[in-house]
Each structure stands twice: as C-alpha cells, then as structure tokens.
Amino acid sequence: MRAVIQRVKEASVSIDAMVHANIGRGLLVLLAVESEDDQQDIDWMARKILNMRIFADDQSLMNKSVLEIQDSAIMVISQFTLFASTRKGNRPSFIKAAAPSFATRMYERFIVHIAAQSHVPIKTGIFAADMQVQLCNDGPVTIILDSKLKE
Image (cartoon, rainbow, N blue to C red; front, top):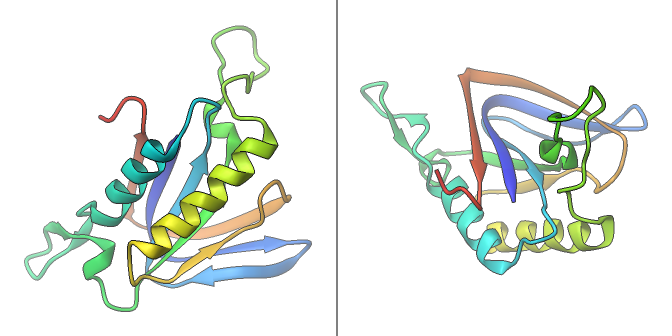
C-alpha cells in the first residue's frame, strides 16, 4: 500500500463538475493498493497517518498529529497511479497496482478502519471515478509512505 499524505489548509474532490466532498484543515491522502496488501498493511498505514506529527505546536514545531488538531479532517482518494513503473520506456506500467475488484475492497476497508481508529471526519472520492482534486498544500508538507518499505 502506498500513500502520499499532504497537510492541507483545504481540499476538495469534484466528479462530473460537481463537488463531491471537501475538507478544511487536515490531511489529503492519495492511496494506492498493491495486489499483495492485506489487513496488516491497512493497520500500519492508518496508524502512521493518524499519528504522524506534521502539524505545528505552540512553538511552530511539527509535533502534533491530525488527532490533536481541532476541527481537522482527512480526505482519502484512490490513486492507483502511485504504483506506476517508468523503468522501461516512456509509458508507465501499472502492473503492481491491484486489480480493481481487490483494490476497491481494500480501499473501502482502509476507510472503515481509519474512521474507526479516530474521531476525525473522513471524506472520500469515488473509487475509479474521473476525479478532479484541488488542494491548498500547507507548508508545503508532503510525505510518501509505503507499507512494504516502512521507511
């Protein structure tokens, strides 16, 4: 499982030119599922995202997690292209990305799991929809996580 986490002042996702969901301050999570992912990947990813200290404390140091920020939210968007391989040629290969049926189940399980682990509102896009995502990256702060590398 791979994720790009962006600390945002606001973010929204539109589908068919209509805003589907939006958040104010919080995290935008672009999430990709690999065919080898399982519940351990979901657990690890959710725990890391919820507890990652990337929000400023009173001394402007990144010491607070999204769980400690009042009125924060998380938006989770499916993003299979995070598994793009460009090693060979100029057309990306997505062979490591999970098949849509498996990826949909894992994406939905991730959303249920992260919501159950926190009090933070969770907003989403629609899996496999043509989505337009807008955001105001705060900082900018952007973190990449991979549940297989655990860096």
